[in-house]
Length: 156
Image 1 (cartoon, rainbow, N blue to C red):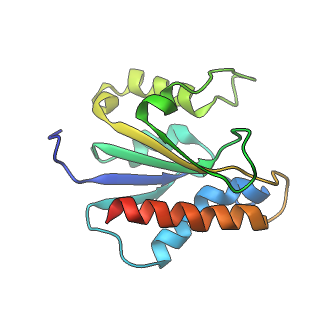
Image 2: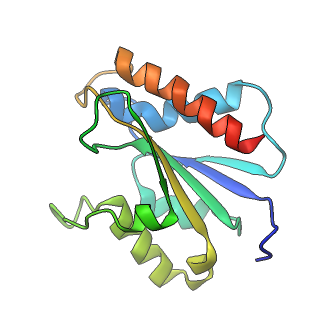
């Protein structure tokens, strides 16, 4: 992949039926319905399964993931983790059925060697409410607006 390849995949993660876990899909929806994105940007919804990423990847050299992140900050805080920071996230595994994002990414790079050159970034918002129910909390909505402003600024 040439270093100057402008292609970018923005992929959302999350479940809009679980309150603020719907942050990723909310961002994707606003990107889809807002001002047009550059033609080099491809959007994808991964649902709540990051292991779907190889199925939607078309060789883009950059992948930006959008999700909720429990990072211990105030609800609504925007997190931006670049490649190294994302892969340095703790790999505590509560069960084999709920792998942390960084663990899944490592497995993908192992199973799909072509993805090893991809530069990842995580754009995330600290959730306030993770419970059954539709709709984001007020803090999450503010975070989504702030994240979108930052993300669009990076794209321009």
